[in-house]
Length: 352
Image (cartoon, rainbow, N blue to C red; front, side, top):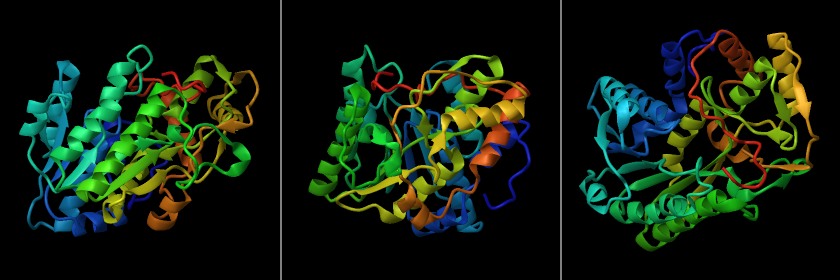
């Protein structure tokens, strides 16, 4: 963030403002981009703040000049979806309700030079394997053909690397891929499909392998903090993790438009540290005056990304892990809002 980080975050409005504040690098990238932005799957956990960040960055880049459209696409179904659409509209982000797997719906979407692909299925994938593959692998082919004249930045996941030895420092973009389970395998399928169409249709593409974005209402740190606060057991089998402040992850995603290429540019988006789950929970215990309850022992491997390429290109994350721990503990202790969606980061069998 360009402004100094506050000592605490006390409201959803303040949180949303901080999460949507673009970096100078993101503003510079948006200044170099021409044309409108279309965000597919904007209704997910990261989509709304990414859309607002793009809008704020474009406004800053324009300096009061020509306004560029930012369009968010999602089902926007039910009361929650309608509320989200109204909120995005209030922030000058256009919304289009759409079932992306419906070819007629997809065909009606406006052609935009810049597309962010965030659609996908993770939670609930076990037992719905066919839908998981349709969303994560078939849909990317539909999107690539529809937006063959656009730049595409597509979200993926570090889960496609599989479990890596902790001593290796996290998987790099050049490492062998060993996905475990239908979710991770179908996400590798997503990458392969975007790769195919990037090469055959010459679509400039960037693929973002994320592990793990966190904010105060959702994320690995929130899961761990709540378990410490509520006196629940913490399984140590997945003993290590990467985390990155969601705003920093979104800013890196925006910057990747500068590097979209054919074949695709691959980028791990991850924090610079490999965190110990035990140590993180002990620190939460000190901040909350609670004693963590552990079960099991740490495994020698984990799902870990090495984010050094992104740090070299775009700079270190603005918000440190220590700041995230303090913010999260304050938020949980004060009864701050929660999305109520556990990350299940501890799953080692690929089942979500």
